[in-house]
Image (cartoon, rainbow, N blue to C red):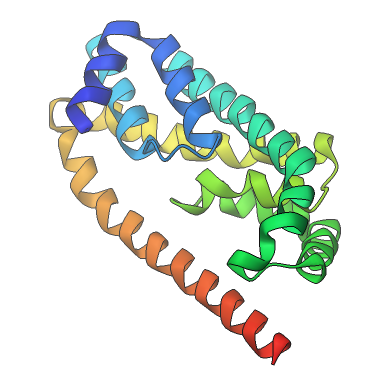
Amino acid sequence: MSDVLTAFVEHYGLLAVFVLSALESACIPIPSELVVPAAGFLAFQGSLSLWGVVAAATLGNVVGSWVAYVVGRRGGRPLIQRYGRYVWLNERHLDRAEDWFARYGEITVFAARLLPAFRTFISLPAGIGEMPLGRFLLYSLLGSLPWNLALAIAGYEFGAHWTAIESYLKPVSYVSAVAFAIVLIWFWLGARRARG
């Protein structure tokens, strides 16, 4: 996958960075940990602008997040009301999500945007929780910017050795995925206890 993503970025430049970042934030798990450092490396080579990479990735994140947010906002509640029981979700969970995003939406979106795995999927629950769109987009932007800046600079600084970034970031991605799974299991166990 790494080679395909790198080739796509090499061929299409900033457009590829934007599209792949938008897809990642629209809940399609394309690892920005591979895309943005590769683009940063191309900036090191002079093929792309470093600030262009950061801007394209961040704008892509915001656009993709908006798409996933709209899907969550418009389709999430009816889908969960209709099919939620098959995955242990009910109306009460929706109410709790809305309450959570009303109280802690900004920090949740901002922090999730800085974490692998979480950053890809935060938009759906924010939409389902009916977080105000303007605040959601602002905190998505504020959380995506330092993430993309760090990855682009890492790719730029590592220069010809940018593939080393993947080996450093892969364990972080795994830990985040495990943490995400633990949160889901905790949520599922809480739902089972509440039903019992």
